[in-house]
Image (cartoon, rainbow, N blue to C red; front, side, top):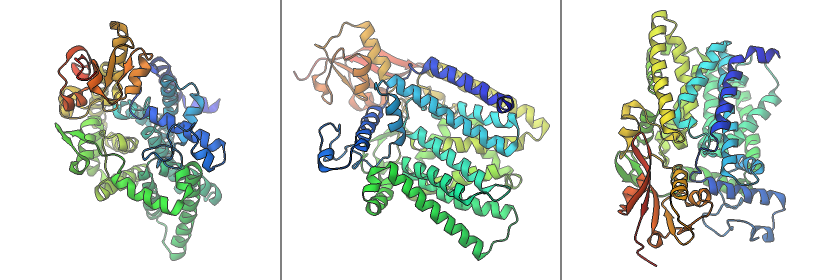
Length: 516
């Protein structure tokens, strides 16, 4: 009861969040990769239930066979799917709506750990709840929570990793070394195989250790550094054991697969499609080095960008702030790795969603330093409130496509239209499919082609019509998102357009078949 009385702001927030969750979870459309992730999780579930043998591997019950190049058999896939496995266990009916509900429920962990991190640091309820509100205003992350069961769970575990690093390296009294090794080993082990960039957490840990030692005025010695290296080595070994236990492909041939995983993460050979950027379709080799920075600049709330930018004026004052330090280290480490390795990224900021909570932490710690000046407090509070209200209005007009938000620097979604990817994951195909069902008399005699997430069209139509998977020339109706429309130049009669704020996200057309 004392905890409830103490953390009323968090509990009120969670109550509102869960009300929002149960009111909206059916609104979101199935997006790219959800079908694949569910099948892969089913494969993993079957794999874990029986000993590995030749017969079990080639068993036709597996959806994706081991001899398929892009298959998702646990011994083939280069992704670990521990979260998807748990999600599949609870969503045994395979309903996308249930999957979205589970994603939203698990997404609450992101806000809980953000709150906990600030409460531990500032011992203030007000200062702990503000970053939670800021995190909600980051539409690119908040809008991805319902349907993205890959990048959002990774963002959550990366934040949890930062939380545990902060807790263990700032203990007033030396705690149990075993508890530290086991806790960090488990969290790091899960984090590093969600996305390979998760291995950057070790650099964060190393740099933050030396920062804390320096800021606390502790003297360095060879023995202290040796102890730290030994402890880190044990954490790494234990974390890799955790990774292998939840990642069959890695555990099946650790040494060869581990180094292959690191090298493959840079080039990502399994993906070689165009990206739509600055009004052009570019192949991965043509992606400019500033791709990620542009997307951060045009999709993050302006007040977050302004606060982070103003940190250069408070560098000396913020240097001793351990929360600012760990978030800044995490941000700079990952930006440095991005610039050095130049990995293939696409779908805007999606692969770097995990940086958004980190940027929120940085901006909030800067804010608390800025508003120490009472005159600045009023002005800054008004400006931030105006920006948050503007973002809130965007939430209303974009729903359920909050993840396509663009800030005022690019002119919102209207300014981004025709220049940057909008509904890249195909959430709008649900609305298009439902329109056809409710407004036409199409049946199985009618052939429909979907440019993306065709399984979603089939699902939301209740399998009412025939889907021409991969063969648009046989279709007399097409459903196509705006980027794919530009690629294909369809000219059929427009029956319906999915729009938000006057911008077309998806188009339903009627065509003459070119083949029969």
